[in-house]
Picture 1 (cartoon, one colour):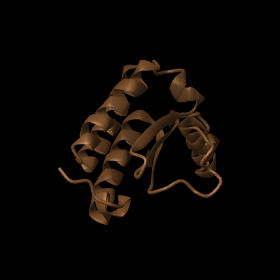
Picture 2 (cartoon, one colour):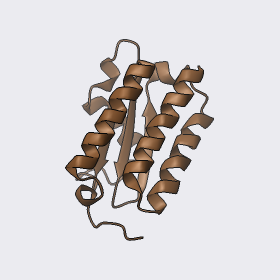
Picture 3 (spheres, helix red, strand yellow):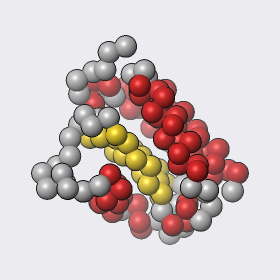
Picture 4 (cartoon, helix red, strand yellow):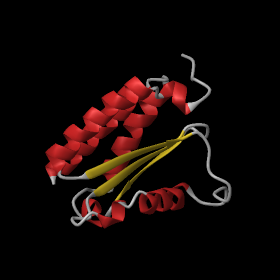
Length: 135
């Protein structure tokens, strides 16, 4: 089990295209607007931000807060830090129990530990779909 040096190696174009199809399926099934942000490193000036603060900043930069139903979801991956964060808008949080995000994070963590990135993201997206459809 080897982990590629860069996110672009772990998530090449064909993998991103397949993930995009899964995102589209989950969006259609749930009405959520989902964005995946994969970064090798933090930008200059972000070192002092917590993971949650960084996700909030990225969420705003992607204009997910403009979703009328407040159903935006960001899956942020900081590849070199081996960290990720799932950030949902107000409408999502009102429908989903906070434990749901731990379930999604565990799914990502389990797959990423095995360098199984594509399957991990897809499985996490399906977990998001499952939790949103239960609400």
